[in-house]
Image (tube, rainbow, N blue to C red; front, side, top):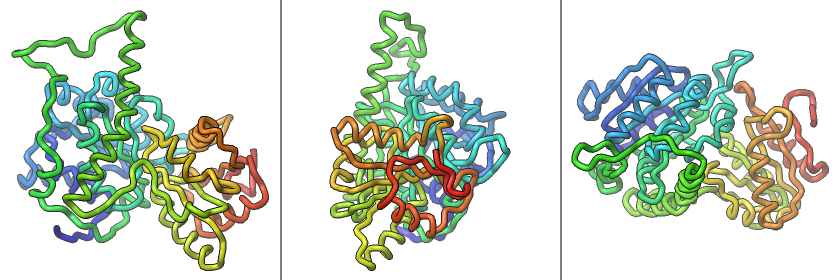
Length: 388
């Protein structure tokens, strides 16, 4: 296993090379472009045997991946922000067709105002499209997630497309030391893709057909069950990954000092690293605080969230998203999990980082202090204490 100095984008590309996709459909958009550029270099130098197709738009990129998956090929594409929104029509085609495509999304703000920097409004606005959604914290997890995503998506009980999200610039363009597995190790972990859900002249079948009201709900139910089944597939993939590569992951969530915490911040993505550092500083001062990182938004970790925060005095959901006219989408999902579990823990919602605005340590400290006093608020950080 070699060590390389890689950005999050490059690390993800290295992970995709280890997964050996047969078709890569590419269209550039900042800050995703480096992923497909790096993969094009790998195809050119023959370190990756794949068809690299440079298409004319993001819509075409996912359409191409759907076509490749429909004939039984392992397919990959990548996008960001407006490109992801342009793909929106195709997202439901991929999930409804049960095509286990893997797509990396570089989280970026959506227009208007026009902005190339990172928040998570692009992917979180599309949670209901039937894709598994994961959020990486660092470059190492990005590489590992690229490899594990195919194992999970292609699992027979899942057969669902997978969207791996990396925070734009903060993660995609930041360099870290990353352990890169050997090809032989990756081959032990991930077998060549085989499926019966494909166009095949030897065994013809009907794909992408129309279904009327009497039967449509049955297909949607099976699609729903596929994502629910991903929870078990994720644990299975991580167990096998740890056995082969020696790195352990924690399933749908990561708990950091939550066992005895009075005050817990729940968040996702790269900002979790700063929250961990802040938790360590406050713990050294005798403060009982913790972090719950959501690694997956779909399937949503209802049981894990409830178990992690059930004894807390208050929780704060910090997210780079807002569902205009209501509250943050992550906050809605967290409160739903608590309600279903019958847990009553005061909660507040902190909206930060929109348009790539920095979330400094001072704001993390503010949230922990604020949780001692105010509950049930929705606050926009950095807007003069604006609350809704």
